[in-house]
Image (tube, rainbow, N blue to C red; front, side, top):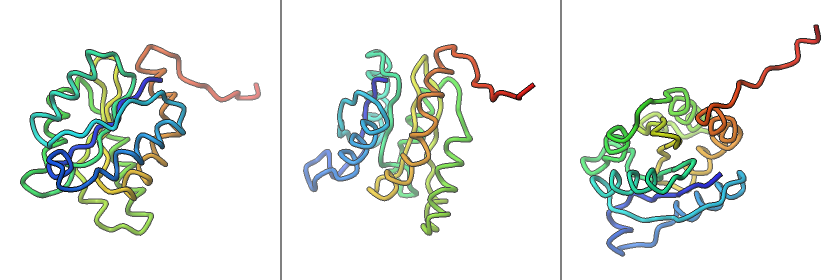
Length: 163
């Protein structure tokens, strides 16, 4: 699975501070069995959409973003992601928020991140904190291979009924 990690951060892109969540994301994608490029650090807004479109053109199986999912006026990653998605997968975004809340982070429910499919690429938005990335990848990693298989036309895994 080819993966791209994208960090959406105006301040990190401007060099105000070092991107911390992107390297964690890249490491966790690698641990999930992906060949990873990035993190690519871009300002939030239109540059996120451009990076996603470039990733689609490059044929990545999965693109995971970190950052830009909050409530500030500059947090635009979900809107930019929706411009690219063909089909949303609400269950992933719901599970990410629920896992964060269950881990004792009440503000996890404020994340507006989305997930879905564009072409044959799975795109998932994670929060911009290292903890949010760790919690999110704990949810995403176990289903990543199956999701990619499904996007590419794979059959559903069926449990043996014993009959």
